[in-house]
Image (cartoon, rainbow, N blue to C red; front, side):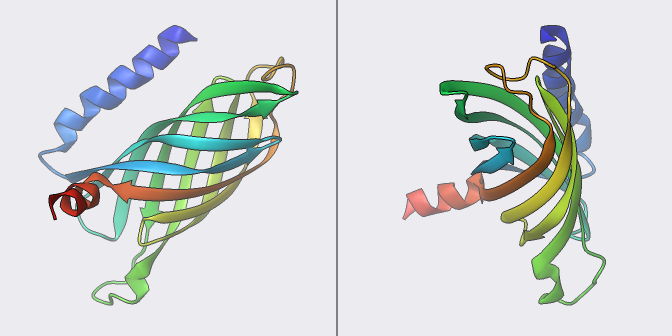
Length: 163
């Protein structure tokens, strides 16, 4: 499993060097809440790629932190999303995007769909399929998956600290 995680991280970092020439890349940090048969807090980073603002691609990695069976647990999570809005030249309609994606941890894989407001606030739902039958602290993670996330562009943080 460590080899798969290392290869995924290497592929994510390596692929960004090819994409920069064609797409604009923005770095973001995100915090949120994830429900996956347990409640988890989430903290991580994302890379956002866009050529136009109609279709946006995001990849990211984060840590899910929570209590499972009365024991604190931390679990890595990798995710990829596509944000879609085909309304052109209408700013008001571009405030929301439909989102489709998937997330993978060491314990489950979950396809998801949802909406995002300005690409900053995400609300997604999906269904998780267990990878590891032992689960986390003896609790198997499968079934309904709900995520609420706040994305903060690093450019915004940089601009706020300069004042």
